[in-house]
Image (tube, rainbow, N blue to C red; front, side, top):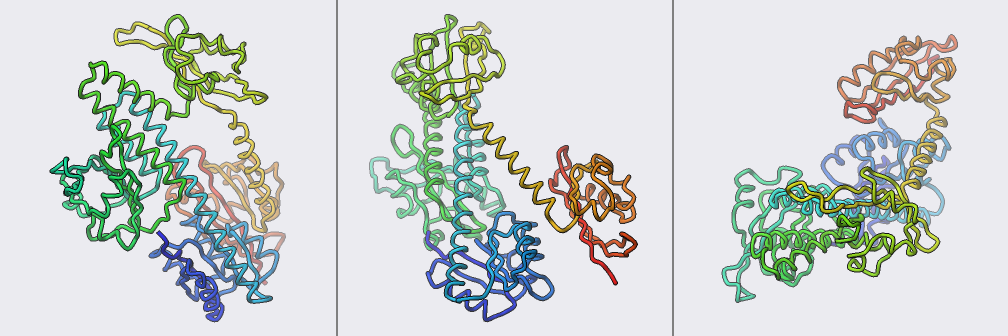
Length: 558
């Protein structure tokens, strides 16, 4: 879909708004809405979806930074560009600290200025879309792994299908996921009218009235040829927004904004389809998301095929071979190591990840052999006894050329129904990058603390019990104390905080889970000041590990 991307520009100077609109809409890709106040912008954001916000700094009633704070209260990710004539360093720092993606100062050559603005808008939107697409792709692939384990774990098929649809809905962040089986009254006529029957549905929001939803879930729905023909060819189909109302067999009072449909193959034929729909806002499906969902629909097809075989001629040799082939595909879809051995420590099954770990030529080579035969290919010899005898999670190393990889391995008994042990099953996961991730998290925390120490307002972090964990230099100055006298102490033991009613308001925030702002007067160095205080619950759920942010912003009175 190539519909325009919506951008909101907020500026009290109409001329600037008009120039911005003309400049950004010139390429035809962007559609710019303009308003002249932050208050009007906040109302508009509640009813429309925007891919980027551009805002002036100095505006009546609410400036750009306060507007940014309000935006970040309900959307942490939308790109925000401060486009202002104010170039003070404090404004720039505050903008970045508050969550602005870019700061562009008005002035200079208009052509160059608006070219830079256009570039920053396009870049910010692209970065956000790429980040979200990669996040959703990773979520889908993780869901594929989880769903594979559902079917491999022996869950009842109907329950596993419902859980799979739910996982794919949560991973893609769409508003509805439905799986349909394709039916026809004349299987011999490829041009005969096609119907779809719902196998399972998941919805994030209420889309249809209850009677319409029940009809969709329990009835055969006629499908338009323009929709079903690409699916029957085995191709994904991304509906153009102009055709959704015409093609959507689930249509009702609410029209879908985006629809993506993926064929489900069973026995190398199109058996059905998986339907992903957005009703709140339009979505541009990226290539990485489409590839991940093709893998997901393929895995679902394999699971359906497994169930059909299980319920038919499972005892027959040919059917047994097909089932093993299906199980092989499912296991090879899982990125984790999986192998099984008999009581003589010889492999009886190895999935693709396990074969890669052993550096075997394929998954069949290890069968009938012991691990020692693969030592020279990579597994460190001292690790073999650990793998064999471990009944809890342990870490080992594997060599591939000059590269050493770390794995988390667990081996458990493999028993049949009567409890007799016939071997062992080993599971493993590559954790080589885990230390890098931990290091990145540590660096992020250090940057976070560095920013806190540099801001011009007082910042205090406390746990849900009111014990102070972090306090910046500015807060210490305002409290006229030192770090060692407040660190680890309850808020209600600090006299100046009591004088400002901080502990009482803190308790209200904990009970309600809502942010609280208030004005308090206090005396600092014999000077009476107005102290603007704000208490914010960083993690709304009332659980251990939650943090409460307290900000102290002094305004001196004369």
